[in-house]
Image (cartoon, rainbow over all chains, first blue to last red; front, side, top):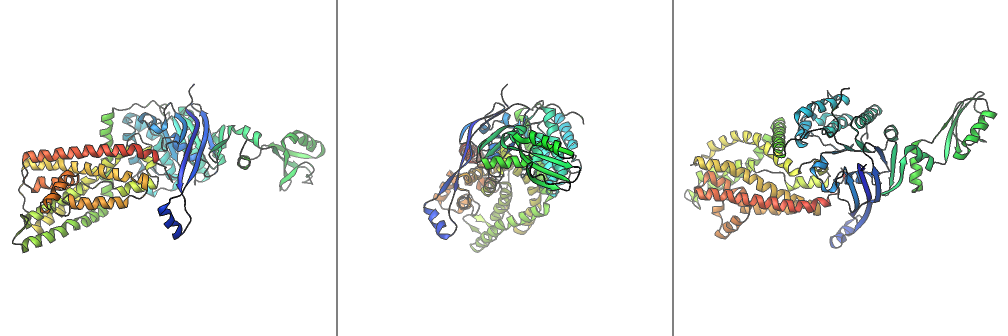
Length: 325
Length: 282
């Protein structure tokens, strides 16, 4: 089956003007302008199957958004190859743009001074959606995201979270087959994040849509993505199962143990990283986990014991620290 | 939850029909927006009227002091010229290069580039829609100017018909010219200086500052060869001048020519410019 997204050696290099501060440097730059080459995306390759949902992770400036912009046709790549649903995104063919959507948490695509319903109407005419399809789709999306009372207010009067929800409705009216979500939950409270996560999962399941998601909130990624791609300095550091990421990168596990007679000194079993009353959390080398667990059970009065992978935030931090997997 | 129809199952309407639908929808929204901010629109219009009123007062005074006319134009004809001027100016306001500069520099173009429709369609439709309330708001101003300055009008139905077409022709010429200028932002990020030069040329060679008949012959010849004349002087002349049918139709043909040139230049620049878009910020 042809992948929904195919990327091979994709590159984006920006020439960024550069000069020191001050009048002297400004005068010098009149004669000779210095630029610096920034390799925002440096030859990445990946394939995403139709219907797959992939988390695209990386610190600020890693190249995530630049990649999504190239895949949605906003940016022209410097090199390499990209195909989305069989189209070359940079050609920006109408049929391609009708089948994708890029939702960015910090961008407003709706008419600022008008109620969102008016912007939805504009999108209907832009995407050539027959009214008999548009109305049920719009009403369903409004219901799913519970924004019935928001869509009649001017967009400028909505809070960030409210605006994000109506933005999502506007972005999905044409039912895109590939959805690029760039920080869709940024700045939102936990309840709102959870609702948007649930909605993305529901949309993907219902329509078999392919989703590529970037987020700084690991909860988004853990809730939605089985596969993650970690990018840093424009290069892919890891591409695989979220579970495998922890296995590959973190050479340790945590054991949370509660003892019958209170928490004594457990430093002989591993590194004590947290202590909360009777509950002690130990960090032990992965290869030692079974042996340490057996020793704890045999030598201590154990009330409860949990072996866990390290938190995903810690794993990602490790990936960036190592820069290569 | 009831089921949304499956992805990709949406039917599409025909291209031409949907383009008409898009223009009607966008124009309707632009009207709504202008009515919503009617006070601001009115203040803007009043501010805009100041420019022709100053020209009108100056030229009427000179005409009166020169024995009733200047260059063959009487005070009443000057009044007619500048009252129609104001309507033409209202109609030929377009999305400026400053707008393009902001849009490109701030990354606001991104949202429009994601749509399966060229952004220029949105600009044309939105500004065209905005003109409906502007003209409605202008009518009382025109009445006041007519009462105060007593213009001389002698208009034939054919001239009114050509005027109605010509003001839209002027609008399209200015749209493509100024949008092509705005695209230069892709290379310079500051297009203001170039736009100022454009405005100076337009002021002098379009009939915006002075009726072209008052200019030297060589300047009138240059003006005839450039697009500016067809965005101000020609539409005004259709109502206040005494153009023959051939001149009226010839003027419309010149407008078509400059619209096509504008589309050509804009398309050419766009194809090269869009590769340079860096979508900064957004």
